[in-house]
Every structure is written in structure tokens, then in C-alpha cells.
Image 1: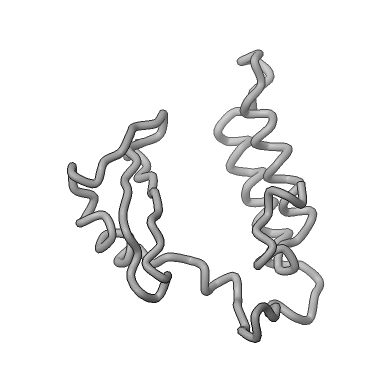
Image 2: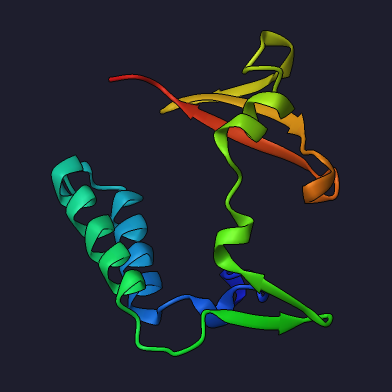
Length: 125
């Protein structure tokens, strides 16, 4: 499990939260459709994982790397940045389609060191 988590944020993530997400994802991948959780159950498990994360017992939510302070919140990409990177989800940015929506590619701004990234835009239900 440790290999799945970015080492830059590993110390900021609650183990119970990760375990809950992993167990839920694993159940969703079951070959037997009847063993897969319902969407209501998935939402409840994700809410549980988020509760664990929000209520984790640690004094520090900041880690030191390369003499920089980096918070988990610093890694969240605002919607406006995603729209800019994908030219407002233009057809030219489309790179594929999944079960839950279209996938777009874009280059992030200088703040994210101009990294290339893929973004999934979920379908409206």
C-alpha cells in the first residue's frame, strides 16, 4: 500500500482512510457483479474515509522536503486551472473516454511546473 501513495504526502494521510479507500476500490473490481458494492455503499465508505482523514490525530500537517514546506492542500488543482489547461474541456484536449466520463489532457501553469496531466470530467447523472 505504501508504494501507491506519493512519498511527498504519505505522512499527511491517515492509514485508516487509505485502507477504507483501498478496500472499497478492491470490492468495486470484483469479477462477480453481485459482490460489488452499491453506489450508496460506495458513497458511505468514501465519506467514512474522508472522516478518518479529517479527524486524524497528528499535530503536524506539514512535511519538509527539499527545504520546502508542502501541504496536501497545495496539491489540489483548482477547476479554473484545469479549464485553462484543457482549453475549457475542448474537443482538441480529449484523449479518451471512460465509463464515467471523458478524459482530457492539458499542460498546467508555471505554479505546477508546467506538468502535463490528464483530467476526467465526470458525466452528469
